[in-house]
Structures are given as structure tokens and as C-alpha cells.
Image (cartoon, rainbow, N blue to C red; front, side):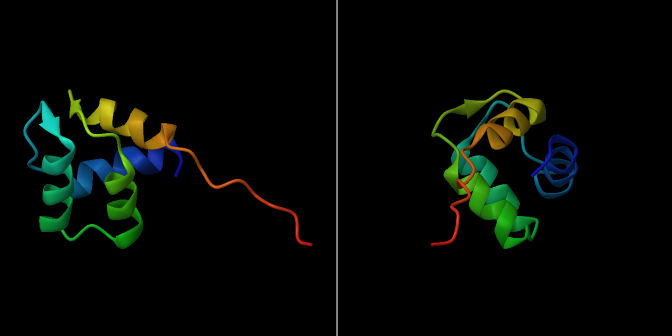
Length: 73
């Protein structure tokens, strides 16, 4: 997910979260805002810690390891 896409998703699906927020706060807020499975799953992958603001969450999400592409064969 590109940073701009992440920022838009955070704005939409984490609306109402109060910072600093725990990972559990983020996950439960996204669930309550009907976040799509892909965004929700990325939140679940975040490290357990407090996040200071939307920008902190966006950086953490964009910093998650992406699956490596493996050549066929």
C-alpha cells in the first residue's frame, strides 16, 4: 500500500481513534468502521506499542515487510 493510499485508509477507517492509541485501539476502531479485510489484516500485523498519531500509524503500516516475489519454478 503506497503512503497516500495508507493515509486515505487511515483517515477513513481509523476515524474517531484517540491518540496516543494502542494497537488494540486501532484494530477495534477499524473493525467498528467496517475496514476492508486487507487494511484490517495489516493493522493486525503492526507491532504492539502506542501510536502517537495518524502519521505514526501510516509510517508503521508502510514499514511492514512485504512478501518477497519468488520466481516460478
